[in-house]
Amino acid sequence: MQDIMENIEYVMLSKEQIQSKVQEMAALLNEKYVGKNPVFIGVLKGVFMFFADMVREITVPCEVDFMCISSYRGTESSGQSVVKKDVSVDLKGRHVVILEDIYDTGNSLDFTYRYLLSKEPASLEVCTLLDKPERRKPGITLVPEYVGFTIPNEFVVGYGLDFNEHYRNLPFVGVLKPEAYAK
Ligand code: 5GP
Ligand code: MG
Image (cartoon, rainbow, N blue to C red):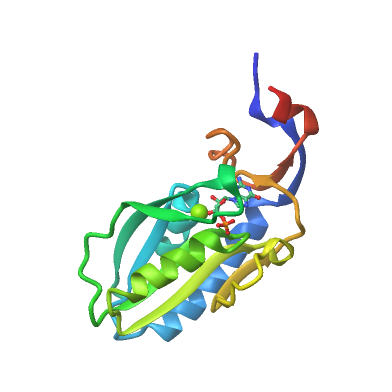
């Protein structure tokens, strides 16, 4: 019998650590967005679990929407992204918060931020669960307003994050055993 836990080297952030951070971050948003009817935008797929947990802690009236971008990660240097699925809410004059799973090289988030800014929101903030500053590409200057955890330069999976589309369903953020990459 195969079990995805067999491939986990260690748990970096437990379910409990994540949940208490989610509550902490949502509390900041609840305070900030009173009376603003914000739109929370999730960048798929990695954010789905964080997004669902976050919005369940939001107590102000709000809307949710999703977008999907694809980045050519094979050619790391290019850092090109395209919108694969656009938002459906009209963001002009709205208070918008981007929810992201991880701020890594910064290519995706920088692209998403500039793309959404072009829709002329009244305000635009960024909330990311994870931040890996060591990986940031030179020239990326975006500073997310809300960061859950700053993590070391390790490839993590779980809580929405995948390796080859697997491990997204894990309730924690962890690191794979080296042999998991060979499979
Ligand atoms: P960027 O490098 O553009 O900041 O991040 C692009 C995307 O790469 C992220 O949204 C995420 O989907 C993926 N990514 C970056 N770092 C990791 C990581 O450590 N683990 C996983 N599973 N995905 C990552
Ligand atoms: Mg992502």
